[in-house]
Every structure is written in C-alpha cells, then in structure tokens.
Image (cartoon, rainbow, N blue to C red):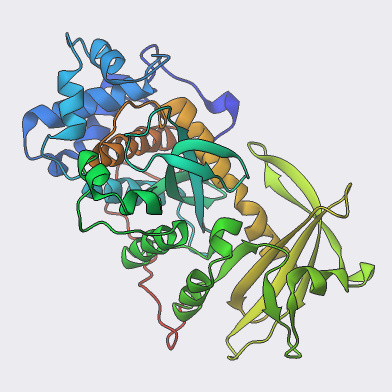
Length: 406
C-alpha cells in the first residue's frame, strides 16, 4: 500500500499517527464500526481481534489472538466469528467508504477484481476444493474473490465473496455442515465479481475504470453487463477469444494482433515504487461498435524481451480514449496482487482456522478492517482529514445504457 520506508509501527503494532497515542487513534478508528455491533461484548472483542491482527503475533488464530487480548481461551474469539450478533456486511460497507475516503479518485480510480487462494488440507471448510488461480497455480483451497479500489493515492480491499464450487452446491448435507443455507446457489467467479461491482455502483463509489484478469474477462455475460451499465472497462481475455473487428470480420484476438505492423506498437512504462515499473510494448485495434459515445477496442501488451509473450484485453470506454490510458488501466490490475499480499502479511487475511461459511466472511471482513486502519494511518494525501467522514465526494449512481455517466 505504501513504500517500505513508510511502514512504521509502534511497539504494539499500531501506529498512532501525529498528535494521538496509538491506543487513542485505534479506539477512535474502531468506534466507526460500533453501530454494527448491538452488544458491548462483541464490540469490544472486535477491537481486540483487529488489534491482534495488526500485532506482532506470527500466526494469528483464535488461540493466539485470545492470548494477545489477555483471554484464557479461544472461545470468545471463536464466538465472535461464529455466533455473535453483528453485521459483517455493514462493516464491509464501512470499510469500503473509508478506503474511498482516503484514496478515491473519480477521474483515474480503478475497481479491480482478483482472487486469492487459501490452501486447506481437509475437505470440510466451506467451499474448499481444487482451484486454478488467475495466475495459473492449482491448489486445494478455499478461494476468495475480492474487489479492490486503487488510485495514485494508494489502494485497499473494499469487498469479498467466497467461491463455492459446483460439487459443493450438489451436496446439500455437506453445505449444511458448513453453515451454507439452501438459499445459496452456485455462482461462478464472474458472477461474484458482478455482485461486488453492482454493490460498488449502488454505493456511489467514484471510479473511472473496471479491470480484471482472464478468469473474469472471458465471461461474455460480465462484459455485456458492464457495457449495458456503460461502465468503462479493460478485461484480460485469452488469445483464442473471438472478436468482431470494425470491418465486421470475426476472428480470434491472437489472429488480429498477429497481423499488425510493427509500426503500430508503442513502448510504454507503467507502475510505481511499490509494484515496480514495467516497460511493455502496446498496440490497440478498433472493434465493431453500435453507439457513438462509447467505443470497443482490442488491446495487446507485449514483452520487450520475448515477443511471443502477449496479453490480450477487451476494452470499452469513451470514444477517443488514447492507447496510453488503456494500457495504464491494464497494468493497474497488478495493484490487487500487491494489495492482497499486503493484507495477508500485515492484517492476517489468510490466518484463520474456521470452517463455517459465515465465519469466513467475518474473519476476512475484520482483516479488511485492519488493513483499512493501516491505509488510513499511512495516507499518502496528507491534506485529507480522514477523521472527517462528512466530506462531500463525487457521487456516481449505477449507470444505465441510455444515460452514460463516465
């Protein structure tokens, strides 16, 4: 989220910030979520749980977090995740608003979809099963689908969903044992991405583009829906994905790019001090479009050392958009990888021992809370008062095809 040099903590793992003690700063932060906890006990335990996630405990689970909080056993922390009365989805929404408050940028902000595997040895944790990630790794794992917000000011997670494979949905006894209700049906990773993007639009999150990897870009339904919503996007696709050119020729993305002259490629550099700068060659091709305000493109990024290493993207956005902007968005997808890495390492995203469906959501949500605290304390934009949530920010409602908003 920031440069390594910015990662300063107090002795207890929580940076208090200028003019406020660590304990006071953390208490003020946790008070933002108090209205989501109707009872005092879970409210206090939430604070202890998040504080533990931010602390120096190497392996964060019910036992170690309870010990860090001065409790004699893990029962209280387990109750917080499993049965206590509180609104984890409301907390999720509060985290989203905090992240946007700190790093929101209506003109250049990105909504990025990505996934994270949480390796598991057994077969009883909700949704566990074989999974090939967006990066091509195969693991036996629970798989979270995440939505991140990124801008030049920083980035953070704003939403999460647990992927449940089809074999789970076909075994209702197994679902019931893991706390999965009969109302929960199968949803593909792209379906879960659609759900999270819809929530962001309904919440008036200010952004300029949506971007995601090939796991999501290959979904025709997701691409069509984003166009219906008039949401600009850059989605990675496989080279064998079929496209319709401006001359109504139907062929694969790879075939279109292979026919390009070397003169149409442009060398561009993107990145920052955290993700690192990457130089690639880029080319874009106009595709068939039905309207005047928006256009469709096929974008390709190519390695400067291995010309056979080509990545393809389907793009939709305002007519007249330039190549460097499309390439910026495509490269911006790397931010979710750094974001997930940081939340794993600094906020215990993968450090849990829960099997029940709802408990997964609760742990991950509290990990997002911890990450949001770190983001706020390290805010790159010092002029912003992150304690003032009454600030007015640009508002965007869910767009329609007949009323483009970008």
